[in-house]
Amino acid sequence: MAESNFTASDLKEGGAAPGRVSCLGPEGSFSQQAAIKLCKGCEVLLCHSFPEVIQKLLKGEVNCAVIPVENSLNGGVLECLDLLEEKDIFGVQEFPLSVDHRLATLHGTRAEDIRYIYSHEQAIGQCANYLLKNFPTAEYVHTSATAESLERLDAHSAGIVGAHVAREGIVLSPENIADNKSNFTRFMLVERRGALPQTSAMVFFSAVCADRPGSLLGLLKIFLRHGVNLTRIESRPVKEEFGQYRFFIEFAGDIATDWVKKALAEAEAYCTHFKLLGAYN
Image (cartoon, rainbow, N blue to C red):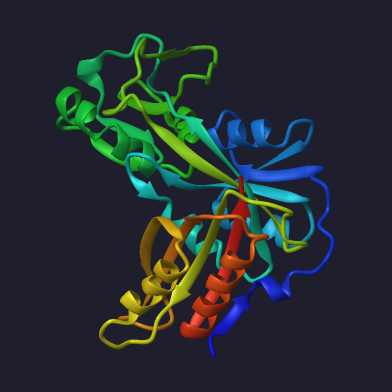
């Protein structure tokens, strides 16, 4: 039987209505933009790191949290996938945010003087071709959020921020500098565990399989037998066990239906670790 941190049977009735929401700051971050759209009318609490975002939720300082889980160009946001393993949290809604990256400089900065590029590593990765072409010798410096790069600008540096960011003395490039202009980040609204939603379009879970040949194939065949359409699978190392991997799997399905419940129950029994991470539209 799987060692399970959080399963459907663990879910208790309840779940507070959103009033305060935590997300990654500073002011002007993409996370803040997503939080405002997902939690209209809520007070937004800006945090310095993703772990702090989740800790605010676990300590009861906020009713919900918003974190990015996947980018259409760079894939999973690995730190946030790991944080979804926290025992008492559950994803209840997702929101795809269109990402429009602009190069930010202080007024009067010349392109030939730029030696440093500041931004979140995801943003730098999503603009890699542009940066290589225009600033081939610049050094990339990662910040905790895109908007934080604005605080570090001088006459020899530039940042990458969203087109929605506007500050006095800051000049944004007239065009999106992302390598692919069709760039989206999926954000997830996370709450303390409560009742399962009445319905869902997608289900998300994590699993660790036994270390033997064909183990992952056996897990996938469970969903094949139940006619489940898997839409995403991604692996991450299990930090406590070198050589073991945790699989993050998403599929299309209604959490309230018997066939989804049976598939999840079989998967839980098959795996050495299983956690239901979310069910959402």
